[in-house]
Image (cartoon, rainbow, N blue to C red; front, top):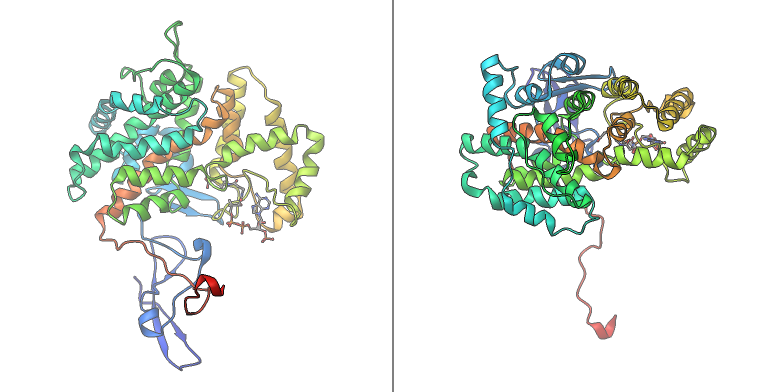
Length: 429
Ligand code: CMC
């Protein structure tokens, strides 16, 4: 809170109210409007929460105008160059980078929880083979409370942390199990001699018939992608996790709801949608046509992987991923015509007045699919990759909320339906 106040006056009643201004360490000043209904009798209307802060948080900072993203104060560029995913997970969970002893303990802790209950594999085998993996993920993660209910006292900080670590540890195992079910491959158990990303790739791609060695290029690329997707303040899925958590629901149920929110093409599902779009465009000669379609207000088509609620500048994650996509393709000695198509689409869109004036730039999802594809991840699993990484953000945000007294999330509405009327019997309708 600051000393600054904003006075609003209701001209019809002549009443005024001083609204306190909340100032964080960085970011826009925010009006505290809590007293508005009781003092002036008004609620606020903000569909899509375009002007609403739902909480205070110390985890992630975004300056959308400048294209800045920081986790716990550390710029994403530095973390993606110098850190690794588990270190970033520790940072997001606790607020500080770990010492070497803490790194060792944390890695040991996460590694200890990588296995899933054998009955979860039975549960997964009940899905139809062609179920979308995000549907399976939401179901399986929601069911974790049924398997790990031994330590689910949400008043107990040790239980809360354990649930958070269990999810970070088990998410890659669950994701790989869903994929293997689709492929009809036997279960692959986590090899704890490998690190987080290597272990995940091993569970995804190893088969009993052949020796499988994790590609260092793939492991490095995944580590980077996981860092970049780890948290992004109060986006739709994180807000969902917080909202569900605010009811006192267990963290597995809250994260399962987050997975469902992430699946939408306006959110994490955009990485899958980008490749579908590039396929549909098909050829560089057709890029202009699709840019025109995206600008046409009578056409629902949008450029997937473009635009962001907060970034009105280049998404810093997209620049890092674009460079990484080049590197991965080069290191694998591969080329992908979709990369050329994506580059051309970006070039044309960034020169177009519509995209320039609306400040629409490529976002995190624009180039990530090209890397996933190059590394053999099937398209339907792209958003699952996002979910594995974002689990760290979800549980960190959930823990932060649990540590702060938070009322249940319960927005109001503007009722726009029928006024009161009397029941009409069926004969008279
Ligand atoms: N293509 C064409 N026009 C667009 C696009 C786009 N991708 N994005 C926004 N616009 C236009 C939109 O039509 C609107 O125009 P007008 O002011 O004339 O009505 C204006 O730009 C503002 O858009 P908005 O929908 O009001 O903005 P928003 O903040 O509500 O939506 C968004 C943000 C990400 C949902 C949207 O940009 C979009 O649908 N992008 C494509 C999907 C996508 O890439 N999603 C991933 C987001 S980043 C990762 C994540 O969150 O998981």
